[in-house]
Length: 313
Image 1: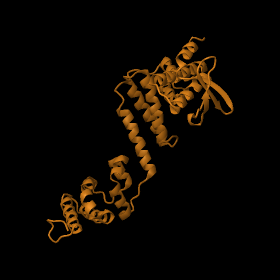
Image 2: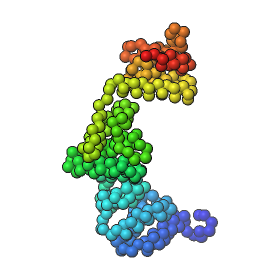
Image 3: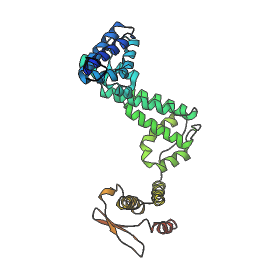
Image 4: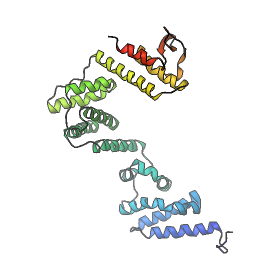
């Protein structure tokens, strides 16, 4: 028995400490129902983690009951709590939520949580956009998409993805969001990010209908291929600038080189079979993919090789 506690054991001391803290916090609640639920929670908490740990952690759960006290709506539903605390906040209040489930059967709704998270991310996207014609267009597009979601023709997740694509188009047009896209900026954006054409198409169509524009998402294949090659070559130069050695670096280099020099798609660098091999006195690697052989220059010989290649018509 620790000195200074007379004849009181440690467990008994923490029992008394928990009871005292429970009474102090409970007295701060205005509603009898809240005080009763808080007392019930404290008893349950003690059974879950013991008096010692419960006494130390109790203060972290008081904000949960402070909210309930300020909103005396009877037994709170998961939707009601989610609206106030958000999904992230409820994760921090996991213990009171476990108590609500054990005591009253309140269960988390995964679909509702996902929907709420999507709405929050959409709002953050809007809030981070500067004032201007770009934001006005984004707000109008959101209203249009939410109408579609309301009639069941799209999901809230698709709404967020469509708005993200719209914001990317607007940001590419003007970082200040003070201009609407032109055919030139649309073509440049889609040429640089050809994979975004499908998601951006909806926003372009919306702008055409609401602003009297005639923007097109059609692109010349040659322009897309040229932009993709430039992007891959930039990645090669970035790898050269960063430097490196060893197998991991070689695999990263070979993957990008195969895509840039041979047009190979979907390269899994972890499954590459390769060996060192010089070609016409240029150091490089022989790479085997799907029973086909490819040659790429090594990082050491790449600067001269890439320079010669860029001069080709």
